[in-house]
Length: 166
Image (cartoon, rainbow, N blue to C red):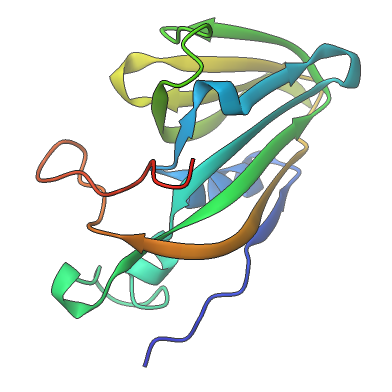
C-alpha cells in the first residue's frame, strides 16, 4: 500500500544535517530565475522541483521501485540559507532566467568553524558557492506532489517531466 507522504520540512544546523538536506535535494531541478541572493538579508533562497527519493524507495526501505510498480513523484520545495556573507557563481549563466539546472549535491567546507562555504553542485559542472557565517538552512515542501514519468538516471534513459510545474 502506498501511504501519502507529509510535506517535508528539514532544518540544517551542521554538516550532518546538511547532508540529509542534500540527499533530499539530489536531482532537484530549478530555473535560474527561481534563485535569489539577498545580501542585505544575508540570505540565499531557491524554489525547486525535488524528486521524492524516499517515496521511490517504497517508503525508504528496500531497493528503488521500478516505473511499472507505480509512479514516481516530484514536489515543489523551497530551500533557504541564512547568514550568507557572499555568493560566487561558476558555470551558471545568471541572465538565462528560464534555463533549468539539475542539482546534484549540497556540500559544506569549513574554513574557520563554524564559518565556511556551502556549495550547490549542478550537472554540467555549474556551481554556486555561498560564504556562510555558519550552517543555517531550511528545506520545505510547498504543496502537493505530481507524477514523474521516471526516476532520474543521470543521462541513462529518458528524462522525466521534472521541469513541469515550474
